[in-house]
Amino acid sequence: MYGVSKINIEPSLMMISVQDVEFKGNSLARYLQIFADTGVVVDMISQNAPHGTNIDFSFTASASDLTLVMKAISAANLDKDAKASPLISVGYSKLNLFGEDMVTSCGVAARALNALAMADIEVLLITTSDLDISLLVRSENEDSAYDVLKKAFEL
Image (tube, rainbow, N blue to C red; front, side, top):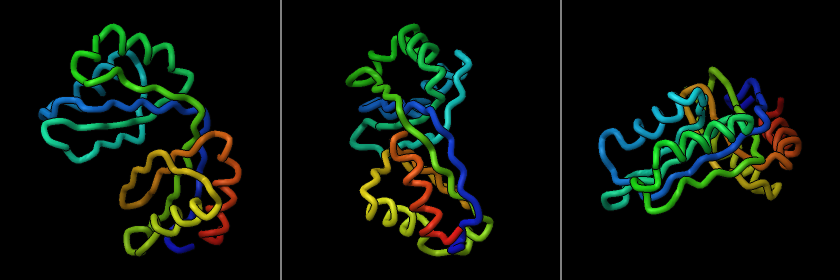
């Protein structure tokens, strides 16, 4: 209810975060192309607003692609573009809230984030569209986050 009709879980993800990359029209595209060329499927792409002449961005991929991600980063020599090497961490799950009524429902993200916060479950990355909200949580919180969200949305 409240705009959400279904919640899906995608386990075993990693998060790749890149900080302080020079903000150019192709900054994010260049990084994503490197992973595409290596056969890594990326998801939950989140770019922050520019700060000065730089941007930060994060995205997720399957943890099973860790070797490919490491190879892509090394081969592309990405360190020269950013202040530091990309940060890669594993042990995450994505909870995807879906609902065709989200388009006309107010406060869906607020309800989800508040319910998770009240359960002391940290959301590390969030992406949205008209019909869904994806929330990245630590894998150990996957089941409790799912239960909290089901209750919050009366599913």
